[in-house]
Length: 390
Image 1 (tube, helix red, strand yellow):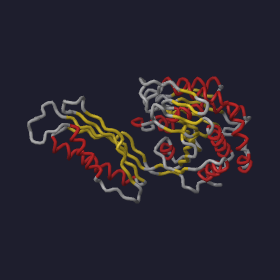
Image 2: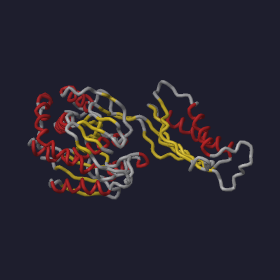
Image 3: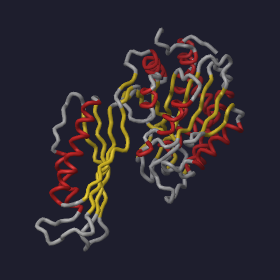
């Protein structure tokens, strides 16, 4: 179904209105998916629901793989190219927390509704949306819920698929529930690390300066914060979480820190990572504690340029829908596409707040504009308007 770009742009408003007809189905999929716990490495139940949806809608090759990805293919009229649309299935919430979702007239509240319940719900509903709008792409549309994406998962699901698929992927779209207006087509360098200090059983508490693991890790944090960071390339260190100790009156024998190094320069990330490891071992040598330094995930900087037809077309579509653009680099699934030199973007679908909290909230009304944006980009890629030769 090849259409000129001007025709696609002019029809976006009509798409938005017609997508509203499927409001209840999109929201039902959102609630059902979000109420299935899916912490990283435990996404099987959510994957099964997604694949069942694909099967009900008669997609091809509805399946999973060794990593636990959920897959289905909308066959194209010619099938001469393949567009991969992916949303991560895992969330930051433990399976034991209450996953009950509250639906109000204008918003939806509950853990993971924005990250990434809505993204998955739209992927699950997309075949029905295309049928409802009588859109028949020439390209194969591969729909995927990716497993083991967040945190220590290190985008393993999407990496595995791209490493092993026999289908040549021409373009990728990463779908996130929030925030509408987000557009990412580049990735920054990143290193996700953890430091743990533990006091050996034979530790001599009578030695001078014996203070326990919490003070030791505090020393390490202070040293890390003293590392000079350049303004160019943009670089920062995010201290994500700290844990340790068991009570009020017991000296802590274990403490841990999780942090992330980010930079526009891969070399800078590597250098700072080495410095933090040196700091951890030096502090441990002074305190007598054992230290464990681990790298859980890494990303290389890269992506498509601002002028690439895929990036340019995405901005044109957002402008036509009056979506305020927020161009920001990503460290999510986009990185896996970049590593394979596949042009790709990340899009948000609606507005929200309290992300990654129990009262995570998303707005219902902007969803239809977000889905229209996604459909417009699919049509543009399918019509060849995002190829570098354009």
